[in-house]
Length: 309
Image 1: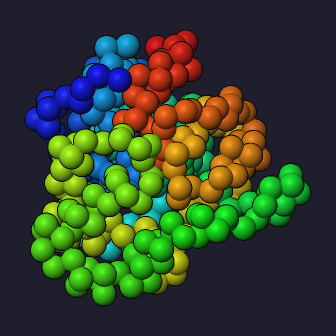
Image 2 (image 1 turned 30 degrees about the vertical axis):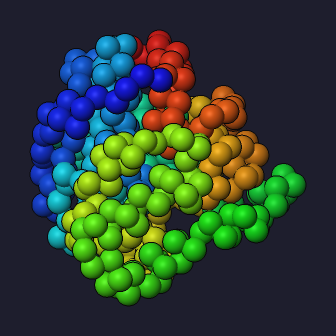
């Protein structure tokens, strides 16, 4: 797996995209085939630190941004943090700012949802996608017709208490996390005892590295905006493209040590994506597969996209 690069290993660039949203991003391998890497929650672009350089060396123009409200990106002037808002930001960054009319994309958690919306919203823009341990389209009747349970397991319900609080009690939760230390400790729990990650997947120093951007109270609060949108306590910018099957060619991976993503994730992927390779179960990985099994993911992306380069 190898050590992660130092925190300052990559220069951070900034661009203003639509509606005056300031996006911070890392770019490596300019001139290669464009590859968008999207983080989820509780992550920033730092979760891709083990992937950026190897994928750039493989011939990709790697773009790893912070979504609006996260890390080095600005807060949303319009107050929207939903899937459609994130997807439109990413299209504006790659297309309007960087000049790419097509790309491949990879993501987990919220980032995987944004990748899916991006591919459906801008037809032909995402040529291929690599997804892991992420939210999937709401296709209840189709899942049930395929014999897939429509309810999360008891284990998943127990692990999802954070979702309810961040989506319905965000202000109260923010008030409880009154100091930078408390905010970082809260986020750090998701890399440790909450069993999202594979056991031992993150050292103490690595947890500190991942949680540092969440010391900022406004950004921690903004990061919960998508949960509020999903639960109806925050207005959406527009409806997400999250109620349909995708035709974008997809590789799906699943880290089984994750206790928050539905156990039915692999089976659900077989319904949600018409052109699917996998899903493949990846031992030794949980929610943060791009960090926990970085070499494996890097090789997967390289092989899946090799002809595009």
